[in-house]
Image (cartoon, rainbow, N blue to C red; front, top):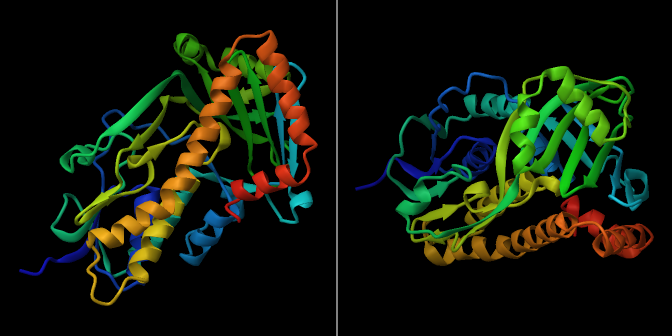
Length: 368
């Protein structure tokens, strides 16, 4: 008996919505399963993502890119070590208008939702439905992985990420700033346009002090952020609630089987210090849609050999990014002394490395 859908996507987050729109362009019938709301999640979403040019091009093709007020370009990036090491990237040096864009998560979700409203081949579902292919986009806490017998190898970091937004005394100047210190990573990402003074905070802090920071009054918390970044943007005011989540490096043992595949955080998690998590997930969606588009006419969308092409096309990039972010996290988690000298010397050397630095920047932007 024929199924109602060619593809059922479990999880209607950013990766799931993007994949649904891509597959509908291939004239596939898609069921998109909305995840039930998290109990107690009545507060606003304070997350922001750094999206590279490849992700922007994909979302623009789907007419889902947010307006300028919700997608701020990054003209430069400054990275500070814990013993004088510094590293900088500049869009002009790379010959691009921006290294990345800092995108407001609710705004992006709204644009994707609006695009789905006008796509008749996508049906929103409250529960999974039979389909030739099931794609799991439920995120890191996916319950469906176990249904398919997937082993999810997790290495927990002794850190939690704290996210919030802060208003600063000084304008951010379209510069993304990052500090490594005491085994922690603090990032201030520009928001609110070219003249803005709003920043998105992503602060990876040691587990033992995360609760204390979250319990501080807003003014006291803002002072802690000021101190951690050396008052680089002057006085700060907390502009939103704070959110926090545990950090981990994780990967699925395999990403596909007969009639199913994983994508996004359901397949892999990396440390947020490089800001590449959502870029990896969107690249998964693009790669899977491309494999299905280019399949032989006699292969169904759930064909295992077909799905393994998708897995092979993505695993190398994901493993490389996971290794790079894990290596940096481990390096800066080491105590002061010889380790501090080594890592900061390495940062200064890399900053003057010329072609190597240029190549790394292009890879981060999703370019060959």
